[in-house]
View: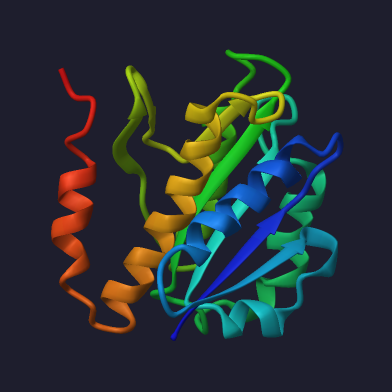
Length: 185
């Protein structure tokens, strides 16, 4: 059974709503155990338990929240060298489009890579001209079906990669390849 941990920080509740949708997507992959935790409640044991992590932060001045940065600096800093090879992805909500949410995702991915996580983007289009290359990004809360599906798709893809790499379910690769060709002109 693959184990996925979704960690989020949220000031207004928008990133929390995204996290719940990411968890919904991860749970859609059969055999996946999912934990959803606010960054204040995550322990080192949670990180060691997980095969895959989805990390979400509100965009704060174009980067991650101070709580998320502190989490990487102080909570999991001691796990250096123990968590290499786990799979991870990012998501972020900003106050508006152009608010820096893709840069916030890149900041999360950079921190994850520094700890040895294998990070990914998603090439799938969840709607015409709507993709999540650096992670799921939303301006405000997820309202449209495309925005909600972007979050679900991120969680599902994380659980699929965990199933492929941790559980050896290579048959999921063909499904992933088919998904990535939707809505392409």
